[in-house]
Structure formats: structure tokens, C-alpha cells
Length: 579
Image (tube, rainbow, N blue to C red; front, side):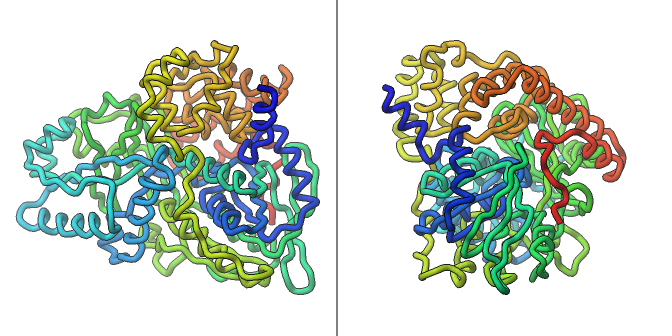
């Protein structure tokens, strides 16, 4: 037992407190082929791509894994149906291929099929027009693991979605895409990179670039938890910082090859019983589309699409944003949603490549990669679904600065941690449940979050049966999940657990405040917090929630941003901006 515990402690994929210190020492001592800046899905994907090619890789992130855009998406792996109308066939084909890979090979435990109803509102032309688009959508990705389109009469559509007004449609078409918990997926990509040898370290901010003659030869980083600094030497650096791309480019002292514009997307979360439906929905708006997405016991309604030029770390939703979503979804609902129905709100920033058009919804979702200086590559744009392709392109672009010729990308064949053995465990869920005294439903829920790593999670409850009980004010989650977040998944602050390792911050009306003290105690046990540290973590989180609630009652971006950005940072050592 002692040897297996030591083995688990030394597991490369275990991002716990001991690994954190070891990683710091390695950052300063080792020479890397590649340093990846940014712990979003593209950065994590780039680290995984490089590590599985046999390269020596370090990934540094100033805040937490997926703390920016990658935890605030629509949570879909989709081709982007609306991009067919914009004739971006290549983007759609690529995204659908990625969706298929996720469902079958890479992350079947994390990525699941989800159905949508497309309500038809025009007679004669709309059904054949939409059917042709969906036929193309169904076939462009090659083999598929989701059902094809199904045509419904008005009565059939209303049976599927009783929540719709009868006058809101004349018929409908059901089609399928896929969805995932974006923050959990990104974190698992990063842990998989660590499993293959990458050094992955959060709360580690790039504060400068190293140079040898005319080339970038590494970065200077600061541990924002304790203020230590060190230099990381590498053959090449890849900037995967999304909406911070331009800021990092300025810090490097060079000019970028492209500009990135931030587009704010706001989503609201409402209880499942507020919309009676067996399926999600996709609705046309005057600017774009609106999704109603099933999410466990909730619905996610989104999104908006507006320019954002304020605080990049904490984009704020306004009352106007929320009213926009309610107004548009209520045009089709028999029982309208109100502000009182909203359990959670989140705002994220899309890193769009700046184009000539002033409308962000018209900016390209294609990605761009460029060697902006000898030893420095930048990548931006794209969409969550195509992160793996973006990562491969970034490593390919850095190859010119690497010693020798790197092997080709193989991540289309590399399952994420938890994928191997997942399907067998689903079949064994009843046995696993009885073994640990849990309901089979609970075990299936855990399997869809951890896959075959569920054994590691449940092992933390051995001798501590209280950890196998639900959290008092967030019963969808067990105590062991909180402990595991800190011991294995790299969570360093209360916010990391409540907002990203779990989704308590958007799934409960109290937004995590009611269970903050209980969670802080469990996290503190792993990370060695004093009672004063626990209290501070709870206070900082409470202030975050209060600021978000206040900002969501403001009429403008400027007013909302002023309130939200005034809240204290969990990582108080962050330098913002770094340029």
C-alpha cells in the first residue's frame, strides 16, 4: 500500500502540492525545446501535442487552467452550423472531424452527444433549405457517432419541446452535436500533457522574454503565489494566450502579424424545470443564433456577441446582456423566463482575428499562426472545438527553431486521461456503486467527469466515509471531488474549485457562497492552509460573487467592469497588464 501511495504521489499527471515545487525547480534548471504560455485549451493542447512528439515542454499559466475563455464557452463540440451560411466549409468540416474524434477516441468520457431542435418558421422554402444544410453538416465530418437529422411536424416538434409557443413554429428538424464541460476538458488535456512528460505549472506568470542576439531564447516567470522569479530557457516559445495575445506580443518587444479582438459572449443558466423539453434548441436572431443547451439539471441559454475593450481577466455581464438573452428566448417560450429564474451567469471573451468588418459576429473563427520573431510563435483565433488542430499547427510553426526535425503530430490517436477503460466501467457502474456505498446514478456522474480515473477519486474516501457524502449546499458533488481537485488537478484557490473543477458557481443560485466554507476546509487540508487562509479564501470568493451580482444589474459595460474589476484577486500577485 505504501509503495502504491508513493507511486501515486510521483505520478506525472498528479498536479498536487509536491509536484508544484518540483516543477518550479525543473523550470529553472532544465533546458526545454518549447515553452508554452497560456493554460487554456489551445495552450494545454499545444503542450500535449509537443510532449507526444517527444519534445521537452513546459506550460506556464498566470492564473488557473481554463481560467479565461476556455471555462466560459457554450460548452459545445460542434461544427458551427451557422458557418455553413458564411461558406466557411473548411472550418465546419475540420470541426466536425474533431467532434467525431472526441466522441470516439480522445475523450468519450468527457464529450457526449446532445440533440437540438431547429424550429421552422417559414413555409415552402425553409425546410428544404435547412435540410440541405443539415445534410451537408451530417456528412462533412465523415463517419459520425451521432444520429442524422429527423424532420418533425409542428405537433411532433411540440411533443419534443412542449415549452414552445404553438405560434413559434410550423415544424422542426432535430439534429445532433456534442457537448463537454469545457473547464474539465481543458484541465484533463493539461494533465494528459503532464502524463507524457510536460512540466505544467499554474500561478506562474510570464513577466519578460529572454534573448540571445536577435532571437527569443526563453521567458522570465514569476510565481504569483510567493513572488519568486526564475528564467526558463527554451529553443522556442509559443504564445497561446488568446485575448492576451497582443499584450504578450508587446512584452516580447516585437510587432505581431495579426491583431486579436475580444468579443464578449454572455450565457445564463436556469433550472431544468423552467423549460419543458426533451431537446436543446437553436434559434435564429437578427445577428446570429441563440442556443438553449441542456446542462445536467439546468439549461444554458446563450450567447451574446459584442465588442469588449475593458478588463480581459474578468469580463462582466450587464443587465442589458441578460435582458437580450431573456427577450430572445422568450419570443418562443409559452412560459417566459424571468430574472428570478436565473441561477448562474457567466461571461467569456472570444479571441477573434481582427478583420475589416466592425461586427464581431462577422469576424473569422479561423485561426492564424505565425512565427512573429525567431524563437517566438503566436497562435490565435479559432474555436474551442478545433483546439487540437490549432495546437498541431503551432508546434509545426515552431519546428524551424527546434533542434532536429520533430515527429509529426499524433494527438488524433492519443486518448485523454480517463478515456481508456471508460466504457467497461460504465457497464460495471452498479458493481462500483455497491462497492463504495453509492447510488449507481452517482457513479455514472463521476465516470462522466473522471472516466477511469474514478478509482483515484474514490480511493480518497477510504477510511473517510464523510468524503463520499454530497456537499451540504451543492449535493451534485461529493467531498472527495473537492479533495481530488486540490490533490491531483492543480486547484490552488477556492475559486478554482467552485468555478472550474466543479461548476458550482453557475449551477446553484447561491453561486457557491453557501458551501464556500465547507469546500475551503477540504481544500485547506490538502494545501496546508491555516484557519486565517481559509477565511481569506472564503472572503475573496464572497467578494467575487457580490461583484458579479452587482455588475449584472448595471446598464453598461463600463459600469459593470468598474464593479467587477474592483473585487480582490484570488491570486493577489498577478501583474496586470504585464506590458
